[in-house]
Length: 394
Image 1: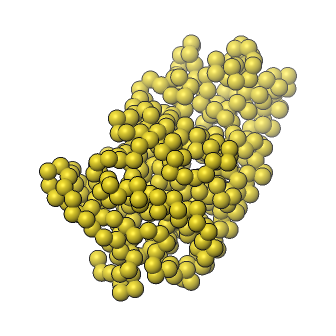
Image 2: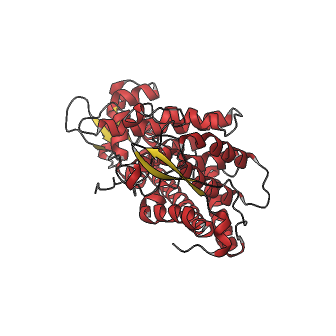
């Protein structure tokens, strides 16, 4: 790739190191912010539209009857999508079956990895609410939970790597990209932490987190889980900075849909210093994802309202059925024992309510069994499922 003259100072350096018995060129990025500074001018229109879309998404939280219910499913959708980018084959339905302890036929190792991602998100956000800073310590804590189960549990969860990793290829010698040598990781991450906390009024927050995401992915500080944690870093930063009151922005659907461009543009930043191209891609993703998420929230609200009115028309059974409907908003795939436990109702009452909801076309029974039945809130799950089909392995 050709490097524009004014971008040459933005380039990192290569260090020849030995890994796996062969000599490789490991890339060490310069610290942020880029020098010369980002040319914000051509991006201002897009930045304004992204900020407006993000503001509308944040405003959706104020019209939701119960933000926690929406967040509960939103976080799970993000966990599925982000994990799929890394190669898991689990769907949102698989995760919900697993959490309902009804998991026959689902890829168990994959779904455990997705479940760990949910726990990692929850932990990171809880720590921020406690006033804990977005720091290297917190990133290590979140990483430790992220890799607690599944394929990554042998890859030093919660610890910066002490050996060379690589991206693409079968070994460092034929890799697409080789991140910094292990001895440089702590220094690079320390610089990144300093940038996150430094007062930079000249750099808009969306631009700042876009820069930080690429830097994290370039350092690749862990043996595994870097992609998932790098995407989660975006949401954690925006929540810490007060841009979002609730963790409603997740870019994995956009990155998944534009996977080839995402990786190609990340590499172009390293090779040519073209941060502006990356920021155009990133801000477009923020704008599109925020718009889609706000629209989905409104569709979900309309669905809940229409179904609530249909349930109220049931007459005497309506009271219990409405409570079960509320449980389904949190768990769109549910069993009778789980609903009874959630609501403090008897199992016969829950079974009767689910039967009424089934007759009204609101839920569908998915096991075909007389015992151990499971019910799915079909139209709600369909809205949530958009874009969560697993990527085909190549």
